[in-house]
Image (cartoon, rainbow, N blue to C red; front, side):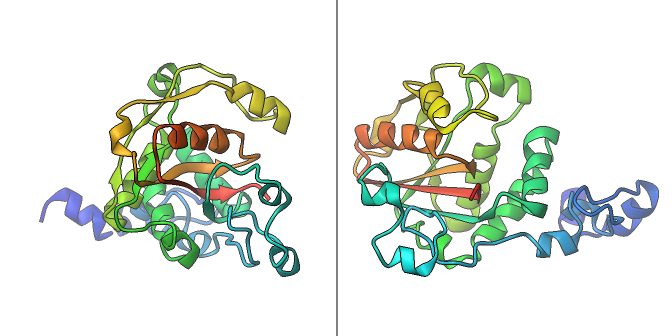
Length: 245
């Protein structure tokens, strides 16, 4: 058995826990399964999930509101994607896990999140046979600085488990300012014209599932969805690990 197999089976965990003790960044408990980290198993089990019905676009809403044909944006015909879903609200251990992935390079988080996401029926319903997973791109400069794109890692893990193809069709042609802290209107202005499509044949006539880590105001998702629709996608859906509610 090689080292990678031992790590996957967690056979290194007792030794690592003693030699290199570490703590869960969400609750500070000692990690007993470091190879399954960076969160402890209790925090992985406690990831917040959506528990109320959602608009077809994925926005959680009270049931009575949903019965009236969805959220205000969808009722006004302003949503450029057909369906959306996410694991849960951007809070608690889920927020911590995504920060560990994005800002500390804990790439194993992508696999654990993909596992959790695929346990949800609303997530699985987006992943039709023949659909293609399209990660939201980073600008090349930012990708070089970070060394990876968290959306690509998440899409790869989802594709590995669902059998769907990952197509890096979108490119970010403008090095936009970070969206954090911007208002909804400022975010929309920031990403206007920022994305383009290459290899359009990979999505033409197919269901394109846009994959990202967090859905905040939807400015990035909507900009990307419009580009995918213009590239010939039969339908665009949006799948994220978390959603700011």
